[in-house]
Length: 466
Image (cartoon, rainbow, N blue to C red; front, side, top):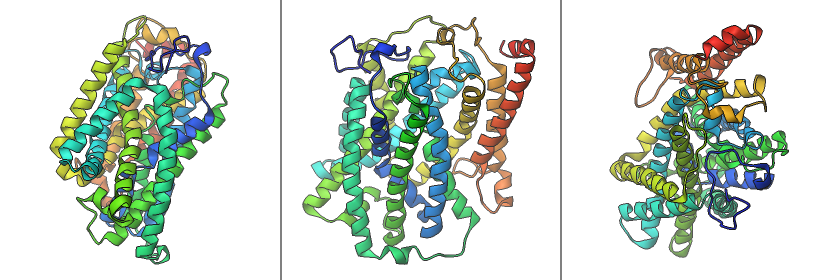
């Protein structure tokens, strides 16, 4: 996010609107950023989970593809808001929740970022320790420092990293596909077994959650595009990059888990690299894993900064964050995530599946409210100045948005199946978790109806935001 009036490569803006004379970038950079961000080891592990927890290859791949498309549509609709608004995604949710009310989902997003940074650090630490012959903890620390530097430099370097990660990822994944087929023909792995709704929808939920959880920050990386950039082009560039990249990576994970005979669990990075070979080839694969993971971990750290800045700015007319403060906040975020990674590095896989599915409970209703409001009621008509004024147009608290959000979380609870909690309806449905579908559809419908009523009766709408 370099200021165009400043020659420094280091980003100087934070959550304030990006002026038109500082807009830059291309549609292609959006595609490569999200392609590179998804061609990485955590996506491989997510795909592998479908096999580890009972799925077969064919229906796991089909379920993952369905979830990618469903979740990818949601996240790409968020991305298309970036050029029109010129602000980070979460600050725009003050329109739906109020200046102070938006802090609730924002703080939950921060917890999500910490979890994703921590899981990414665990896997990258394994790769770095193998290359440099350090302990896994040492590898984790090296990776954390690299994440800090890139997130601090900011927007331009992040997009450059995305381009490089796309190239490295494409080469590495083509090679891995070839090596896996040498171990066992893919045609044999695709032999269809009896269809199971439980395993199919588990795969769908995993990939949908993967995509939907990008929603709270995807517009952060499109907001510098020129205001007249086609929303449709942003939608397809971001959505296709994320869906293609994630499906490729998760397919490798499915195939690798299918031939691993249980050897993948607990040794995810070493096993994937072992499929590729030894010696110099193994070293290059370890480096590609760490490099690919660096992209998405940087996005998570950068997104955390934007969220915390949004919370800090509540009620303040203008907020500009100095480069020194940015560095300190980023360092604290990454230090906390790194500590979590070091503590939990040996119980990674089971915890990660539970973490992914549980996150959907909190972000599907947020996405539903944000998208319905933006595309049906406030499309391109947001008063940016009022976003910082609790006494202004959007008020301090928006009872409609907050109420629908809480309803969206509550109605999912009987249908959730995760390591943290299993709802009473899960067993009735044969172990199927459909909470994310309910969390999208029901809040979207309720919010749309309430906003329609408010539009017909403006006095009621005004009262609901106080």
